[in-house]
Amino acid sequence: MFRTSFTRLGLERAPIRLFSSSVTSLQKAKSNEYLTKFYTPEMLQSLKITESLVDPQTYIEMKKAGKGERSKVAPEASKTYTETDPKFDEPIMYPNQGVGMTPYANIPREANPDTSDLKLRFQVDEKKKLSPQQNFRAARIEKVALLTGYNKDYIRRLHVVNVLIKRVSLQTLKGKIPNFYAMTIVGDKNGMVGMGEGKSRQGVKTALEKGFFNAVKNLQPIARYEDRTIIGEIDYKYHAVRLSLKSAPAGFGLRVNPVLFEVCEAAGIKDLRGKITRSRNRMNTVKGFFEALTKERPIEELAAGRGKKIVDLRKVYYSA
Image (cartoon, rainbow, N blue to C red; front, top):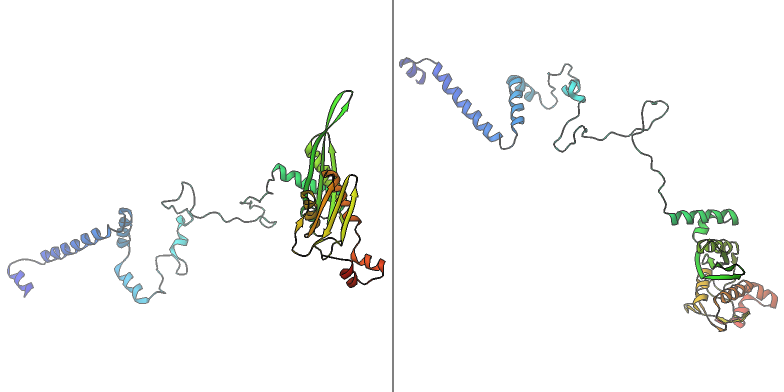
């Protein structure tokens, strides 16, 4: 009836087409306004171009075929359109991408005889630059290792203490000639201790280096009871210094002169008591204590010399 009413009025079907096209145009306008909320004008333009190129019937057929269906736009069905596109090799530009930069960094490839045209795209990690002090220590350790034959790691782990540094003067007819003196104690804290002296007119640094060399060369083992204290008592006299030392029970600690404390730490002695009478000269104190420790005989040797068992010697002759 709707069609006949229009024909009776003398109107053709053209106005109906115009009315329907105007409705679709209104719908498209509304959809475009809605899409502007989510897409930029450039993306909307690309969408319009895509809609004009894709046939609706082709789209419907691909929808019916399912997910496995491929587009027939590419020359070959086994390849995608992007691989055959000449612009595929061009770098993709992103908003946060620098000018002339690709979105992905180049993968470093190592050159080998088969690929001589390739170049290394990464920098080889060079040795870390050491400070002047670290270079001095490394050179000193290498020299001592060549001189003594000890392992470099063992020398590096040694406990080093400079117990005495002083400046002296030699009076001559030409005047006073300054000289520097250093006394160094080294030890592995496990029964090995050494004492060295260094003298130099060039400066304190050279004197300390010489003292360290001599101390490492003079490393000697000492006898310890249970790897923590001395055996029995020590009553030793060195020049004007008299040392009176006694062994101590476990956990007693080091209750001795501060200079002897440093030597005990380097030697690995943990429990000791005693005092210094008469002179307390640092140089003579260290030399006297070092001699007393190196001259001490182990408990096995004492037991063999006295014809006793080690157990009996511990009970009778050793008091801790």
